[in-house]
Length: 384
Image (cartoon, rainbow, N blue to C red):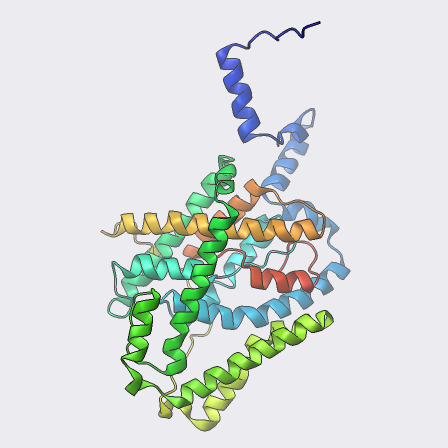
C-alpha cells in the first residue's frame, strides 16, 4: 500500500515556514503568549538583559565564588591587556581600559557563566596589520588610535546586527579547521614579534612572515642585548614552570593564573632596583590614573580611511565572534547548560560599541582567561 504524497503548500506559506525555521527555530516569542501586558514587558526585558533574570536569585555564596574568580582573572588581565595592546600598536593603558568596561557590559547581557571577556592576540594583530597599512602608529599615533576604536565600533555594530537579525548560523559556516589554523598562525606571529623585546632590538620589521622577521633579527646582531635576553628567558621559564605545576596539581590552578601578574610585579621591582632602563631595557613608563576616558568624539566616521575601518571591523568582528562563541559553548558543555548564540552576539556587539566610546578596542572571550575562570568555579555571568 503506497503512502500518499501530501499536497504542496502555497509558495508564500512555504517561504514563511522556511524563514521561521531558519531564523526562529527556538520560537523566542512562545513565552509571551497568553501573558498580561506587564508580564510581557518584564519577560522582554529579561530576554534582552539576562542579568534581570538571574540577579534576583543571586546569593552570597555566588558572590564569594565570583569574588575569588574576579581577583584571579584580574591578575591575568593586567599583563595580558598590556601585552595585547602592544601587539595592536596601541598604548598599554588602552589594553587595561579594554579589560574594564567590556566585561561590565557582558555581565549584564551575556549568557555564559564561564566566559571571561578581554583582549585577544588575533584581534590585536588584525588591527595592527590592517590599519597599520594605512597609518603609521608611531608617526601618527592619534589618528591610528581613532581608526582603531572606529573599527571597534563597526565590529560591535556588525556583531549586534547578526544577533538582532538572528543570523547566528553565519558563524557556523566557519569550519573548526579554519579557526584553529588561523589561531595557530596568529600564535606563531605573536611568538615571532616577541623577539624584538627579548633581544632588545630598536628597529624591527613591520612584516609578520617568518622570513622577514628572521632577516630582521639576524641582520641586526650588533643590537642584541644580553640584559633583555636574560630577563626574557628567566620569566618565560618561570611561566612555563608554573603552568607545568598547575597541570600536575589541578587544585593549584591559581598558581598558573597568578604567574603573569607575579612576573610583572617582580620584573618592575627588579627594573626599579637595578635601573635597568639605563642598560637598554625598554620600560613601559608612566600609566595615566583614573577610569576610562570617553572617546566618542574620537570616532573617525568622517575620515578618508572609513572603508578601511569598516573592513577591519567586519573581519575582526567575525573572528572575535567565532572565538568567543566557540569558547563559551565549550565550557557550557562541561557544566551542562546552554548559551544563546544570538544573545551572545548582541552582548559582544554592545560591549564593543560601548567600548569604542570609552577608549577600548576589540574584545571577545579568550580561551586562556575563560579556562582560569572555569577552574575558579565562577557562578552566574557576573565576573567584573
